[in-house]
Image (cartoon, rainbow, N blue to C red; front, side, top):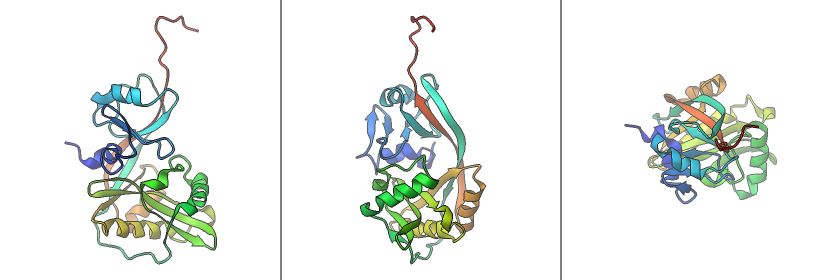
Length: 231
């Protein structure tokens, strides 16, 4: 039996983020301006997904995927390292500032530079985001994205290139661990399995590798009518 962590997008969109979910049958997805993710509970819900995602739209899916990719074009396929936290409560980070709607332009500017694929204009609505500033510049940020019963995901851990090597990413990650644990939830996060730098950071601060999950970025394509002549 799958753990909720084995299908985090579906778990999030059918619980804590159900008010944001676009649905058809058993298939769910975030609005494109919030996050580019879709999910199904099992491969048997493939037809629901095919209806939910329109031709030309691109979504990311974790672990549970359609029974066939017919009608889809695979843009990327790689493994995610999923980490979970079972350690003690870390210390708070005194420089971490809770980001607000007024900070959104700076968040979008930073993520466009170093985390362009998955942070959208509405992503910050999914949970609390914290940042570290120097003057008016947002040097680093991280926040909460997916959430379901007993779990919250740390995401968008990113640092401006001019401020790398200062420990901001690890400090913000631990600040979020404390923030999530203080609400009675277990922190978890994802990174590309081959991203050795990120994996070392998360392991160094205390995260444990829980699972390796396949991740697909796919675009819905128009199926050619077999009765039509080939071009």
